[in-house]
Image 1 (tube, rainbow, N blue to C red):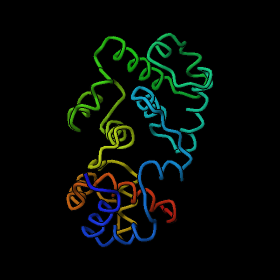
Image 2: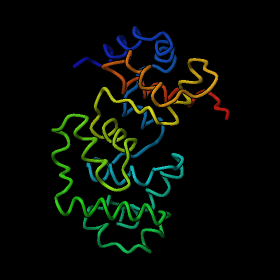
Image 3: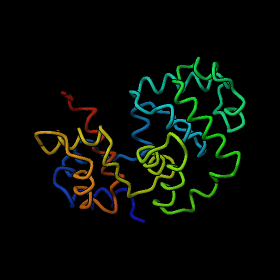
Length: 214
């Protein structure tokens, strides 16, 4: 496996636009990005999936607030499958979760309790197998599975063509007239293998210093 410096060098050599971002932003990895964004990442797989549900279709700030309230509901700790299965809908909605997200969390807990989602096995599977396991759970699409691969398992070669932030970042960085389609993102990212996850981090981070206009 390449060292972080080797990965940055190879990625920069593959794309002059990314080379400029790497030069401007400096060394970056999952931990550094989370430090900059003041993001608290659960250590366990179940907690990471819970965090993914909470964050769906929310700004980073709103997701952080609601996730914090969820932890407070369980005395400051990340809830486990039994905790969520036994929690009342009213209590979960009381922290700011929508009714649909409560259903998703309950379904996730049920899958784990019944052994239909074996979390301890996920790290042993390849990327496609992990994706298949996660999207089989109600409420988890490709985006959620990709974020799990990238941020929890820290797989090095993941791309999320449908991520709006990535599409906007590519539009701005490459001077495009409009956001690229998800398929166009994936096609462009072929040049970034086997460090597509690192490219995603730099593209997301580029938005932090670039005014985004609709």
